[in-house]
Image 1 (cartoon, one colour):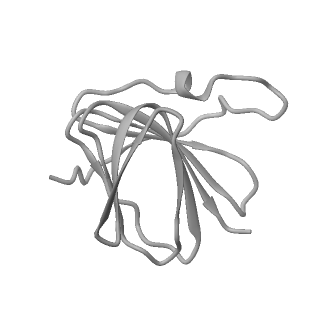
Image 2 (cartoon, helix red, strand yellow):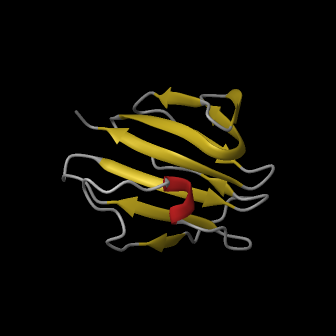
Length: 117
């Protein structure tokens, strides 16, 4: 089941030259995918996501590769019919122009950076 309505959060909590723990910048919301964008230059898209149990995030394919890192919990990633399990601290690069799905068999948080340069 893909959750089609995502809960987006936009604010100015992320500032340059200020230290913060990124996984503490968003909370889980029951039955929801929470996405918080980190403003940084127009050429990059940096997000932190929190997925509740059973939720699926299906990013739109872009021509750019995407770096993802699980920063809390565990995730199952499907890229071009290949499943990979990622746990806290694991990361991977999803090639551009590929279809991917990220599923929460338990609550987890991840960092996602679209690599435009």
